[in-house]
Length: 455
Image (cartoon, rainbow, N blue to C red; front, side, top):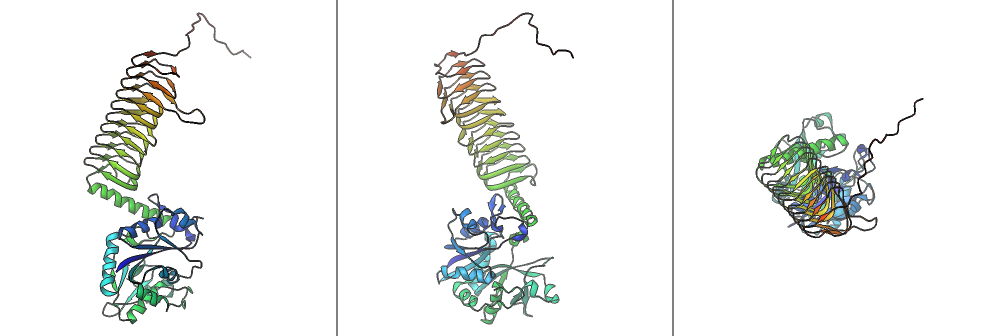
């Protein structure tokens, strides 16, 4: 039987103190419910049905890129009612896994185990024992240890509230049985809602043994109801990511001070300093060193490169044995070849910098193609924007550009040319030529600087 997944994401989340639907709040720079959708895909689900409600169409609109079936729950009448909205969309011969849009960190291994148990016994239930079980439904077992039913916290007696094994809400069973039990639900309870948990007692009455399993870590089943819980899960996730890097051989100067918001792939002998933010798809080669306080997003850092402190690198490639920083910014479509140097307070945008070239101080290079072994002096600017369009600057190999030069694009500088400091270049410079553009210097001996009048 194939697998269908139902994700419940219709809750309002009033304790978040936000106009944003709860499931759209972000963990590791990605909406909570998108973590759950990704996990369902990882399980190989044939179809994924997300039940939404509060926030109107904000959830499906924000996540329009996700290939799921959006099911609207117009009235929030409980978890049982929410699942019932999705059942008609699921083919008859399917196993069904029920997940929650505000429980983002359940591992694939835990869920695979749950699904396997459900296929063996007919019903799989994920439970966990908590020191503080307040608010959770309790698992009621018979003398033989078998699950009998679940009692919600608000409906439980004092003796039942003393039970520490709780229901996570995550369950798996067949579509056929689930549909049959949902039809028999009623809302005769303290909340006046249709509880999905009531199907457990129905399954027991139908002589189906409830198989239970627990996650390896508590944070796998913790939900988000307020900003404190969101922050706690963020830390748990980041610790997990840091441990993955450490286990892969990466040196982290402080594992508590790194934020990973995507997929990071590292070679051997990589060293990362503190306060790093790594976003999107990141590839880091062997023997790369990254200094403190850097943001790297959707970029490739090739082997032997050094990223010094306080750099921002976005959608860029840093070539082998290159050095960037400190205080450098590489903007999208920047490609640095091997052994390049980009230094203090330099910004590069949509430019190719050739092998061995240097842009070391206080410069802006945008919309440019720079050859090999070029030296760009301090304070150089490619004037690439005319107020309406961007234009290209082309600099050949072995060019020396003096400090405080303005290259007014479109313009070409031939190989081996030299541009004197303080020049404004508006026309092509031939290969091997010297180009100068300076006002005549005037000196006046004995000149008296104006003085303020005495009162």
